[in-house]
Amino acid sequence: MNIAKNMETIFLSTLIILGATSFATAAVPKLAHRATAPVATVAVKADAAMPVVTITAKRLTAAEKAAL
Image 1 (cartoon, helix red, strand yellow):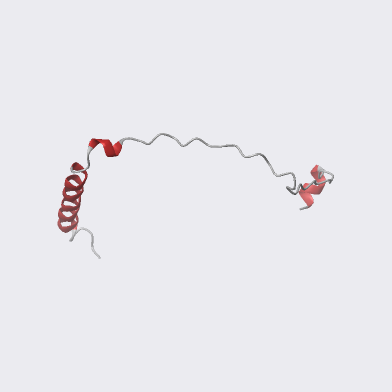
Image 2: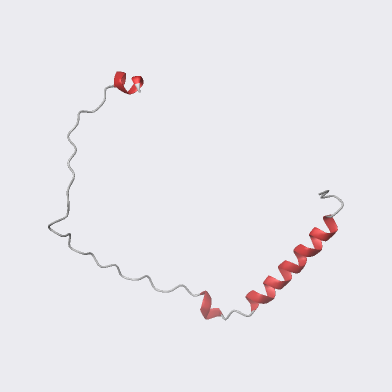
């Protein structure tokens, strides 16, 4: 597709799309743009039966890291 030959079509289709979206957004009432209040989050107490993973390992030295 040669863009230089179709530049007029691209320009006109862009204008049509922008015009249609401007009319579509003009019909939206001002109240619809207002953000809703944030919902309060409730902290839930952790269950006593929650599994806990403990990792006991030595850290790699610089030489060991370089070998990886």
